[in-house]
Length: 427
Image (tube, rainbow, N blue to C red; front, side):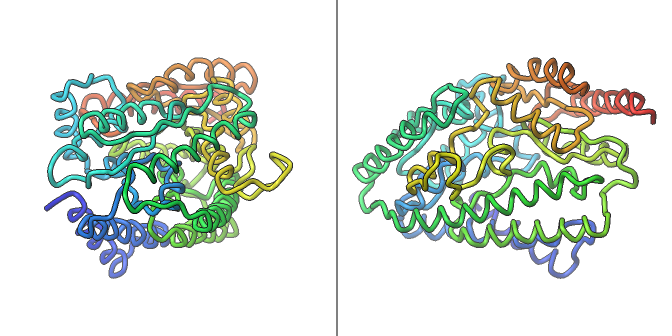
């Protein structure tokens, strides 16, 4: 059984379990999430069987290949879902290919999925970026070289004033359209389709902002693990409207929890901001709940833009003083990504969220191999403590590849940090 077929089987079982024996402790909106994921995997299988072209792109670029007629390969998200029992095998395969062990494993575990039989379909074109998460771009470049696939790079300037680069990024997106149409037979840009997708994204941004506003409440109504979950971006999926329906359901559930004064902890003692990413399969979320810790906000490369934390969403006319074209809207969406940008952008975004969400402490999860975040973490720690009086823990870990001893040490360090923070608050 190949990867896609395996995912279809797992998702089908999970959906059936939710329908027949739902867990009252988990959001009912999860059903929509899994149904959208199942539909996506089935669409990929159908496209592969029919010989339709695939584009490999980061999730933030997915909106444009969709408007060109590509089926999407979400390689990084796919690698997230291979299961913890398989991550060590895939990581070993990456090492056998000659890549270093200190590389960010989240971005590079897609390599075996794309190179080995039974994995993901072979892409017809790749779009990557110089900027944002550069390690993801490096992994995509490796795929392009090893499989001889045409790749197009979008250069996102290393600037704090992202507004000044709108035209520059948009012009490159237009070049990609011409590149894809030349390289892949049957591909044709449909501006009306892109305009429709931009409208979907506009609603998606608005709903995510409402979710952010609800998570800001005291006590925070959201489970830490749900806050950590990276939002599903509509362009990745064959039915973008279903993702909007899912996000709306998340919003509605949180609204009800706020009205009832619900919190996932008996007593909210500490409000934590988590940065970068988090360890899949770890017991960290159980530990946080046991200690009365909520996580209203996770600082990630795109989260400030997703949740409109200091940034407007798609369709806004105030940011540039005019209505943007569909291509410019895509450029707006991929700008202001603080992964791989200036430390000032990363820190400023985090400080805004800390103030708005009444954050008491920060955990900088320095994912091994994540060059941007590891470089920013000490600066954020010093700035947050100086300007806001917020204590910060900088801790190194991996997202998916875990050893038992590493997990135990990780939990112990976080637990000790929480103890110190609670003592500082008089608990």
